[in-house]
Image 1 (cartoon, one colour):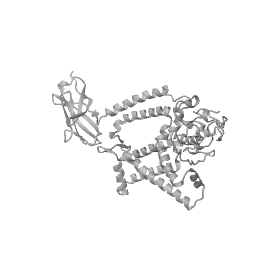
Image 2 (cartoon, helix red, strand yellow):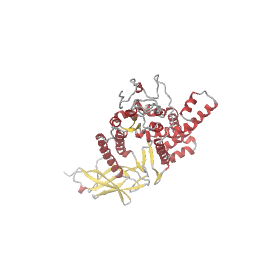
Image 3 (cartoon, rainbow, N blue to C red):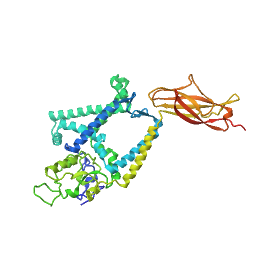
Image 4 (cartoon, rainbow, N blue to C red):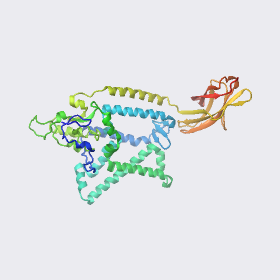
Amino acid sequence: METGTNSAPVSIEKNESFRDRIATVDESGKRKWIFAQKPKGKWYAARTYISWFFFILFFSLPFIYVHGRPLFLFDVTEAHFIIFGKVFWPQDFFIFGLAMITFIVFIVLFTAAFGRLFCGWVCPQTIFMEMFFRKIEYFIEGNAAEQRLLAKAPWTGKKLFKKTTKHVVFYLFSFIIANTFLAYIIGVKALGKIITEPVHEHVGGLFSILIFSGIFYAVYAFFREQACTVVCPYGRLQGVLLDRNSMIVAYDYKRGEPRGKYTKKVTEDHGDCIDCMQCVKVCPTGIDIRNGTQMECVGCTACIDACDTIMERINKPLGLIRYASENGIENREPLKYTGRMKLYTVLLSILVILLGLLLFTRKDVDATIMRTPGMLYQQRGTDSVSNLYNIKVANKTISSIPLKLKLEGVSGQIQIIGEHNYITVKEEGQGAGTFFVVLPANIIHERKLPIKIGLYNGNERVDVISTNFLGPVAE
């Protein structure tokens, strides 16, 4: 009985060389291609339904517009983001910072409690690979055994046709995914111009589409599960985030060991595992779940379905491989909500509430007013003093705003430099202006006088900005 890293003891060979390298690489360092057998069972069916929901969301969200703007847009080139119809600019970066902290805490909490449930059920890489491209591969090349034979077969017309068809279909769907992905960044309207207008007018956009298409095609046609086992940092972090009470896809070694071939005779010499290797054959990352928790496991439940099917055939209880914790397997304990999870939950709740308040109280018009650097006050006759200010305004609405400025709680006037007595800020744009604040000399009793300037859209006050007025002080 040996103990593997981050796993309960299982009956395996003392030489745990499988932990020295990932399952898709052999001893010489060469890639081992995975021909995963198609799973069947309730978990696979549930994942299929969830994948349909994901595909509907992914391919429809860029086309949904609310009040003339997309529901989601992540325009990193213009630092312009729209989430649930609300526009976010660089001035809102602190909200994104808090959102990222909340997301990281959520990942830690979620992983500590539920392991890699995200990876197996809703990760885009897993869903596209296993529920989309892998199914296309089954349809064109056949099941895992047929794919293996086809790979070893000489290049005949049949093999050439199947391989060419598969890769052409893979690239076409990668092209569609790339266009959809790009729609999240530049918007459907801009993407439509790239597609419909002359190529020479959108050379950069065309190259972006081709580059994204090539990346998606390479990932799903060649790189495949390596994206999870080599590139994705989340799998490598699970060793730090998981503990013995975390929910994982686990093999019940207490019940399954020692393994033995199936026989109709009743015997107590062997456990329930008949060493049929079905759990290994369906694994999309090529691991043997019976070796304990491994970095490559994405928690896809394919091995649960495969094992349950065998248990039904030999009239054994289901759940030899199931969702459980290491302590649950070893001590027959139910999943526990540990103190660490409770602490993470409290912290996450606080961050979510704070983030919600910031989003709820976020202003549609954000302005910054500063005194013009290097300038003192200006005497205006014998009874007035003025200061020169600069204003920068971000309009997060879909309407142009003629912004008027008024002094709040103090007598005086504001004189905007320009043709109009207001500052025009275009929809979802930024504006700037310069103006004088003129105050009566008799109300200035200190060097820096705090004042408030109201920003008005018609009769509606959209914001109040506090600043200082610099003036002379009588001796």
